[in-house]
Length: 117
Image (cartoon, rainbow, N blue to C red; front, side, top):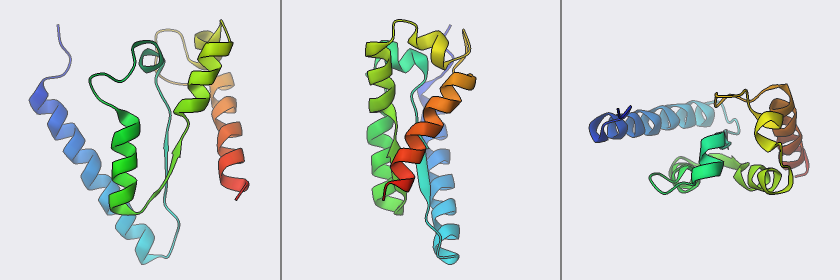
């Protein structure tokens, strides 16, 4: 069975766009930087982004709403290509959520990208 219909997917994308716009307006009101961080699910690293490209989508969002995009996909791809146990070292088995090692990996990427400016 399919989990997503085209209609529900489009509705979800529209909802994301609206929420990002709202957050952007709030950040501008308080003169605050607005970071959008994206990381891939394990299945995205395995199957790619043929149906929907999150990197392009996030880049478009940040161009429109003036957020600062932190795209961690390249680092996750590199980890996948160089660590034969990448999945269990980053994710809970059978789940898209990061485990403790995955959260540490993401935190290290963010530290480098945010604090190296």
